[in-house]
Length: 70
Image 1: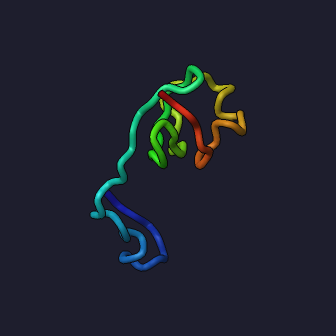
Image 2 (image 1 turned 120 degrees about the horizontal axis):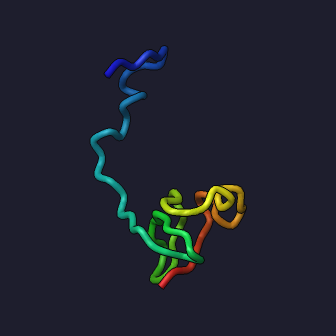
């Protein structure tokens, strides 16, 4: 792999070996998404996994939005 950057390598690779966050894949409103749990049954959206293309334009499904799931 080749990385072309004018940033110091330490900054580019910062956090590379850190432990991954505790993420869960859940279904909410017919969309499969990856969330970071913040409370039981609630999570912050990290990314959408299975959805229609129109779902990417919905403000309610933006990364960082809190959603309720079962």
